[in-house]
Length: 445
Ligand code: TRP
Image (cartoon, rainbow, N blue to C red; front, side, top):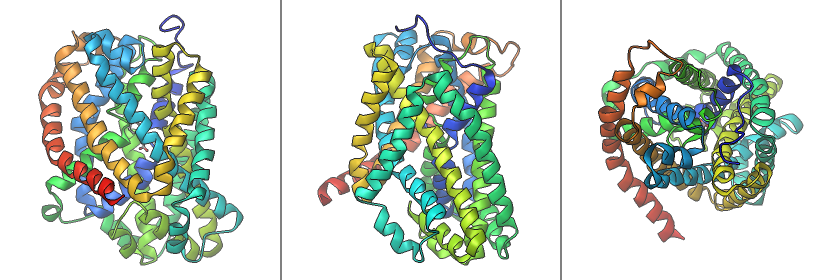
């Protein structure tokens, strides 16, 4: 069925909500906060914003251009413009989708469990102990299975009836929840200390190559770049859509929610004097410090905490949908499977692949590093070289529906020189550390 009757979005709004839904997720609310805490507050935020503009936006526009232009899933789209040799890069994209979703589902499972607990029993008295009890093992796997079940159900419904329908409800709801929690956090005594930590800092000491690597990986992860997710969503767009506007809108919404997440998290944590829990930051910090804060705030904390974790679940779900869609669209186009068959087979395979992450948090952490520092950055490098150097006339293609935009030449220049040079420097630094982490995991087991 490849190409004949390709599904399309119902409306521009539908596409925007789905793409923003992909971008906004655990990356904004959980990863962004802990990386900001770990890397010195506002300096990291500024660096991150800069990278979003100079590196993230051009790559996002490149993905949208290839996806809409080819109207195909990643492997076929790259072959369409670059010949069969480029299928390999598409295969790397699909592999990245597999890896990321397998551990993303486990973290999302934790958030689902916390939301359920807030509703039914309230937050545990000792969240540190509680988190250690639930983060690994069959319980963690079970909630991962619940979460993946929802993801599979939605993707099986298709682009219009599944993905788009969920996104147009979920994204406004998520935005509302995040604003409500941030407003509540602003009323707390001690919120000021949180804002101070989040919004000023000493730039000189905070900037290092390691911070740059973290910020770059985070920009790709948060914007859903480097593995063909935006490419796949753009393949369901009509020809006349204005891609520069779409990418600006998606990137602004993504940064906006990440920024708002900081406005929720830091006041909540500082109001309770729990900053120590976060600065020793590991990926679990938010699952300990925030519930501690919520538990200490009594009934109001339980309600706010419930809203917070519901927002996390909703964000994670719309992101997981896009990760699964990359893999599913690749098997629909590549193997001629039906959507239902692709979704079930691939969804269940990814769910099973989550088992090591569900039983071993060290494994999960290494997967997160491998995915971000190797796959997404490497995928982004491949894609920028592809669109900058291999694809014929990308500026002609991007300009369809966006005639008169004066900066496409600059865009191509960024993709040819600045983005690859930057990514090579970053990869040069991140690859050895990432491989060492993988080696550490192997030799420890
Ligand atoms: N961007 C999502 C987040 O911030 C995660 C995500 C969804 C993703 N799709 C992706 C990351 C594709 C990389 C590539 O949580």
